[in-house]
Image (cartoon, rainbow, N blue to C red; front, side, top):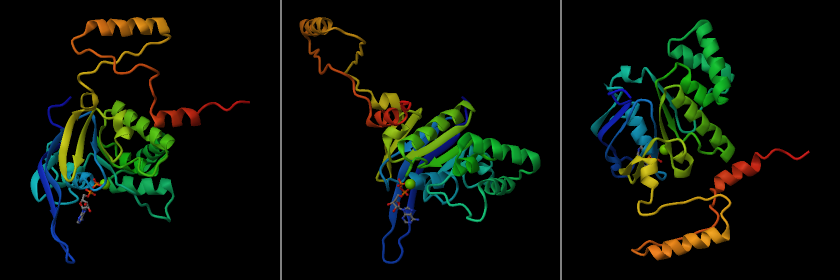
Length: 269
Ligand SMILES: Nc1ncnc2c1ncn2[C@@H]1O[C@H](COP(=O)(O)OP(=O)(O)O)[C@@H](O)[C@H]1O
Ligand SMILES: [Mg+2]
């Protein structure tokens, strides 16, 4: 990993000035985190917790009230910080009268691309993602991809495809910053997550560490006989010192995995 983080957020605060009789609103309050180059970082939190506002500050789409943000070491206030960034906004909107291919050519030209290079890149990205929003964000070979709620309004198989793509982007060396209001959806792809609530960062770190229950240990056995289970139970009881068998039985899959498995089973002839 490079020494310069892909994204750096330092004590970011954003206060929206009140208007039409509403008072000022602090959407982001003293938030700090870094996204290392090459990792997938998930910004997670309920609706209204300040995730999109934080992303917009990083992208230079709004000015920080306090604190600062930078991309690959360049402050977000400088245009150059956005040169190698792809952005998928929440609910992206595209021109109705352009085909997907034309839209990609348009965005590619905005980034200074042209000719056969642009054409083949557009084809490759459409084939890879199958989604115009993502293909648009990737057209100019960004080093950092910022995805705001890419799985919102997408069914479980669709969000599975998006997660597989995020893993593919990481394999290609692209750093990904992604928001979601659904923790489970991001669980499988994020190296690290930050959890936001009411504009503050309330937890931050490696996902596996955040969700580990430190004083518990899990054993998953295949083909265990009732006899063996009884022996294990007896061993644990004999151990004493506060060691307890909390539960034994068949592990549960997540509802989502069950849904995916059940809906992608091969059809019977
Ligand atoms: N331009 C704005 N003016 C006033 N309030 C805003 C503006 N943008 C967002 N907010 C408010 O800031 C809070 C955080 O919004 P947002 O960052 O979009 O949250 P999230 O992306 O986590 O759902 C919300 O209460 C929202 O209503
Ligand atoms: Mg949002």
